[in-house]
Length: 313
Image (cartoon, rainbow, N blue to C red; front, side, top):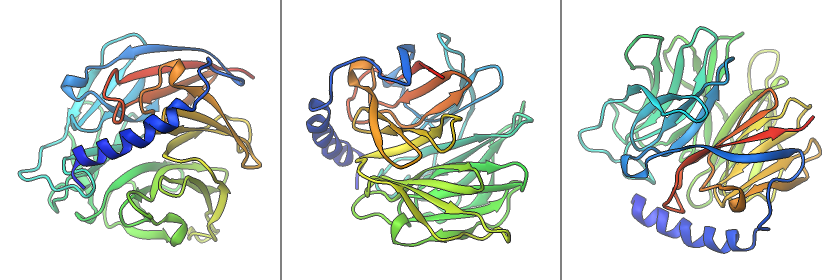
């Protein structure tokens, strides 16, 4: 689907959902929400995914600008790398090149997913400190690589494909990607299936945007995928997420201008809404007591930003 058609359709649906949202400030366990950084929509500075280093600096993918940036709260984004543009982009569902998930190793190496609809560029790209971006693994050009997670201990990368509805695994050094998990729970129904991705407590966790679900897939002793478990349901437009550090409790970004607190039993409530400044939130990062929420403005068409909030203990 062409991006203009896609965004028009999603915007209409989001407007209906957002109008029903409670116009109040953040609720427990979040407090003091505020917009720390405003980005330039005209320059396609639309943050899709985020990771944070030990100092609290954020690393973002600007999806349609094809950029990887570093930003400190209140500062201006510093471009670390711009991925090469395809000669003729034909990205499934989007029509244009898309930089999605991001993961960071302890040594500062950054990994990102890149979808262009072309065989020469689609896959996993890496940027090492002071280096230039280069591809370390190819992925199917007719897919949409999206979420990304790094297992530093096992030296493996996990990647969701939102079109094919699978999770790939590959060596962190690069090489051949293989399908690690598949099944109906990961598949799309209309637009996008497997989306956000995290590693937590011996399992791979993923979202399914179309189905509004959070999934848990245990990693067996052999490293294979165990049975997929549906952890939570009823969250339309769910994108990426982050664990709070309190067991299996997590915060999930929803493209309909909402962030949900999802408890360990799968129940969930809204803790941030458009009233707090959300503009199509796409992902979450938690660093100590600080919560980072990038908004890409895909559906609202205004004020892409980075919101910060305090996570109460």
